[in-house]
Image (cartoon, rainbow, N blue to C red; front, side, top):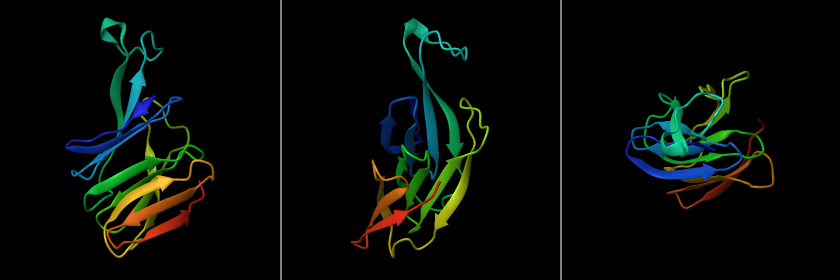
Length: 147
C-alpha cells in the first residue's frame, strides 16, 4: 500500500494492492506515502513487527494555489490534482522509476478547467482515463485523459 500526504493535510485517500495513498494540502504539495510491511525486502525497519508508512515522493512547485483534491487512476496510474488556480494537473510516474523513490512528471495541465476553484476530482472506476471535476462555479465536467 502507498499513501500521500503533506503538511496541514486536508484529506487523504488510500488504495490497496501496493497503490499510493495521496495527500494534498494548503502548502501546495502532494506527498506520496508507501506502506512497508514487516520483513520487507527494502530493509525498512518496522518497529514492533508492525507496518510503517514512509513518504517516498513529494510533488512540489507545480501548483500556485491550494490543492483541494487529489486522485489516483487505478487503470492508468495517473494522478490528478484539483487546484485553487482553476486548473487540473495530471502526473505520471516516470519510466523505470524506483518504486521506493518514484519520480512523477507533469504530463498535462488544463488551465481554466473551470471559471473558479476546482474543488473535487474523481477518476471513473471502470472507464480508463475518464475524470470528473467539480468547481465553485457550480459545474461538473467530464474529461478524457490518455495515459
